[in-house]
Length: 398
Image (cartoon, rainbow, N blue to C red; front, side):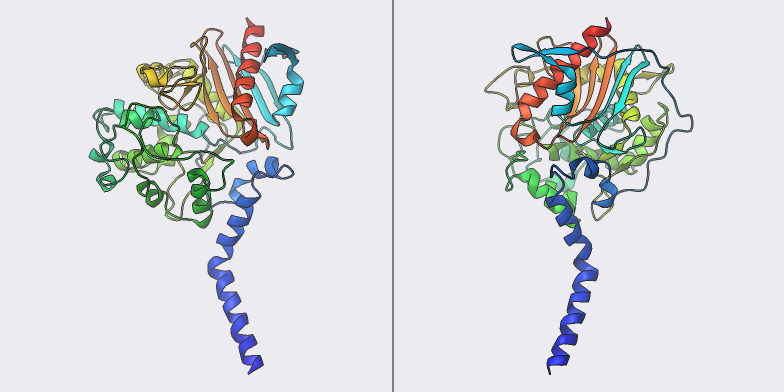
């Protein structure tokens, strides 16, 4: 009898291992994703932790930036004092830094075992790519108007927190959907989503489970799932996966040098809210595209009017500065942040300090990847410090 029970237990463990082993492994990796000792390695090995898409191929005509000599400034001014830039880059655990000026590569460096070929997770920098694709789809007539309710295109979202919400409200992170984005809170919605992702759960089912919290279009509150819904919109109106549309409309056209990939759910749906993994040079190219108001090598890849609108804060709840109408001191456009004071520069921004910073006044683009394990305890401080560093670099090039 004992032997029979032992055999049955062994069979049961094998079955559990076969069917649930991968999920258990992903949950383990998720729990350790941001640990100080492993975070840098994890951020360039996402394909070993999560389910990922087939590669987005490199461009048919890869583009390499011309180079020019440049030395980073020694200091930047922040929080009332001059600080060493090298110490700032170290404190925030910089993995890679690229500085472009007038389309020339002035500076490129890597730390923490990263290299020019490392595919680093973009986190919410991904959102700015998705915004560009929405602008292209609108220009192509696949979307009639961003004033349309999202349920015009996604009828299965009727009866959810997104019913009656305009596409524009979603683009501006003003959907009114109730969502806790606090990465430091284990019970937050964003961490629930992370655990669901590790289990391979459906992104769409998760998005449809959310409820309304406020009147749409009246309050800026960052809801990452908003961008996931934009990903569903793009797949619906284009009839193709997000990664394929990205390749055809942007990746191939602007000479991306390396392939890339997305985190996906158990249905193969891309994580539009933050799942892009690519090289720093290719992130920088996207910044250069926006610096040039959507034009690349004479071709208007993203409509210029869309690029302009992307960093325009067109409502009181979207303006930079502390406000009872917003949960963030930064301003917001169409999936791009506007730090403000002045309102001329803007940035794509991802958790743990990923950035594509653009300053049209100095013609500077700065792309930065990081693995800052302190991020959850110094979020707004680290974001403000980065803007100060980026502005110091841009000013030094004038």
